[in-house]
Image (cartoon, rainbow, N blue to C red):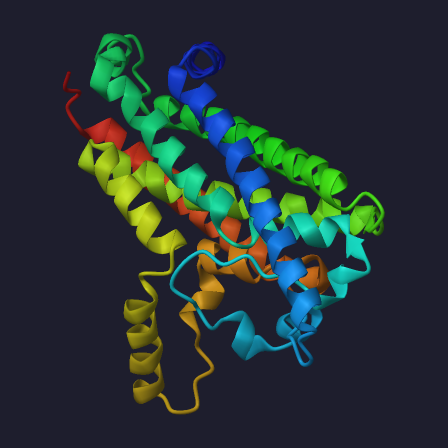
Length: 290
């Protein structure tokens, strides 16, 4: 399995898609931060009283799980005078921008070997085909960690250029915990994409579903599930958004880590384990095609 990991790492580092991924991560991080700067200028110019701050939104469970269609970066009116670095990065990550890139490039990486015949060439050399999936999980985890680090650094550098006098590094231990939880949630989501690619033998389905989920276009369907649960039991507090990695990614901020940490960890573990196990089963049972 160690040799498989080395092969996949070699494939990852020498693929053109990896460098395109790095460029897109940096470009979107810079673009999103610049747009946040424009939002703050607009707030300052219009002097919007009653503008909802991140603290207010995060303290409201209904607002937290009110899924919006589209990718939105929340700006805090308080940032006009003081910008915590951790909150700035959290607002960009929680928008779903990074998750969108993770879903697209994960699907491309998973399916690349199928397209170029790499999988067929090596599958016969391994009796335990499940190791093909496990090695992919390790490499994709490395890929997501790299994307998360690059995105974070890009946001911080852009923030320092734009607001060198306002940005402050504080409560960094809390911020590191936030990044750890986001890493697990992004990994859980990416392994769902792995499962879809393994099941369909194509990257298209994984990319399309990834875009649908990260952009919130699945909100009507998920709302119907919540309504159905309520009709079955009027006293239920069931909310499907609480148990999905993408909705937890969008509702997790540095201020509510203590409230959401356990749920985020459990959701991540469940999706990682189930998606990996099902992908391994599919890989063991299917015929390898060129």
